[in-house]
Image (tube, rainbow, N blue to C red; front, side):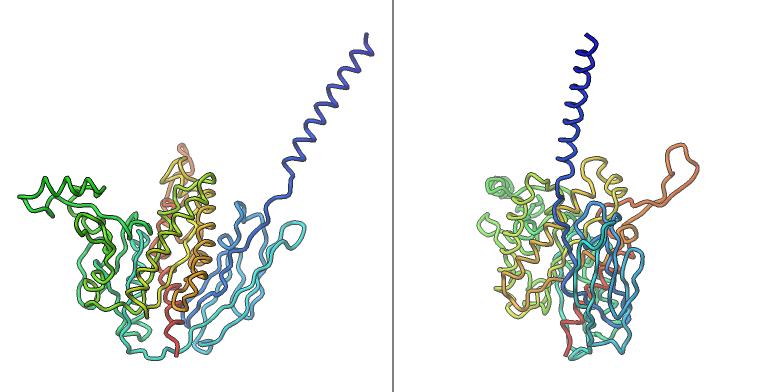
Length: 416
């Protein structure tokens, strides 16, 4: 009897052990291959610091688990970034940079890029007009920093054009102008239109309201937010929304196409995507992007159109502060990594020499370029600590980094 019991116990243990072993084998399956998101070109300019933050150039949920090694004739390899401020003697030159990624067992990934320093411009005094279609990233005031940097470096006739100077404030001659709107996406610039009661003639209010509502145009009664309610590219013709790029040019630039059109979008498009609908979301967004780019190109055949890659957001502290448990840094960064790859591919497919990618995702410090606040370490602690307090919005200093990156790219386009 004892032998049978012992046999049963041993058999049970072996089955349990076999079950554990099977489970372990499943968990240790080969993980997906690590991918590099190093841009082909890192744009630089004399007097401006350029950065590559390691966390943002590999698509890992645990970038801190890897070691990085930079090989380049210029710059400094720090703990979490490569950084360099070119001098005047570096203008017009380029340098190879190699980034190597290691785990405990050796090298797992290698990426290469060019660090390209802008040379002297063809004409410092030439008038340069630039229009910006963007989201709430403009609230960090990077368009103003870009304007000041351009003019401080000799581009005295740099002229930003747009419908407001930030927050819906009016444009003044010689001042800031752009079309950045909180919550906007590619689709918003193609379709967004709300109406106000004040827009409608008193004798036709009811009829007009019914017509608008019949075609899906919504009403909004919030006064003071008119600049956010509508795309500057959209007008209503016979009760239907129509993209009117010439009308936009007429409002912002006396009917002329700007020399440069910059687009900084993506975060609002991709924010709520999940693993289940990520590819369907990408297909829809890239369809909207192609449509907007095509209509801009039709009416601005000679403009340089630059589209920024999107930052991946800050630490989980920022996401928790804004969204509790409804969105994570992990999922958002996954979404934006996929968006940036799709954006790069779409731009290549256009085969348009004046349609260009502005690499932006690698220039921001993951825990320094976004808004922060001082918090107690925990509820009963008298100690304080600084944590990220905003998942997606740049701090003032982060805005400077964004403006600097766009400036370096723009300087390169203005070379002799």
